[in-house]
Image (cartoon, one colour):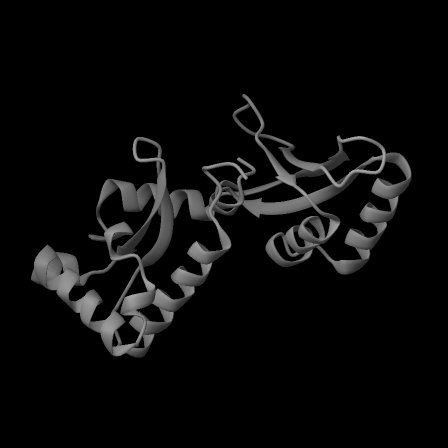
Length: 190
């Protein structure tokens, strides 16, 4: 898997954090992952108005307390969590990316020997900035199916049709796939 792809465990951590913050009544304007290429890792950004109201130290303490009370503190990689102001430029950029919707075609190819389970999925937006298009690789049809149905939320009938064509011709395309830019980045498709 591509190093810049957000892994399933990270998505689960995001859910734990959001639930704990919600249960403890911590106001947030954004909880999202941001890839930091210099560190080659994803960091979870939590934007809260408490940062501006009470300062960074108190905002961080409030988040840590919420995670402790929510029973998830030990499950969360705290060194990768950053509490920021909703006015922070990096938070504004994450919000902008989260709102950008793109539509395109997902191309899936079996690129290994005839009976192998070596698949590549490439998302090609209908419009965009251009440049190199990243691909996700899958070592089994089950992993590919899970990606299509669970992560991309493509209708099961479309997935079945596409996988049937993939089996017959070693390639398929699923048109009109809609993703937000942030989602495409998290999935390793942008």
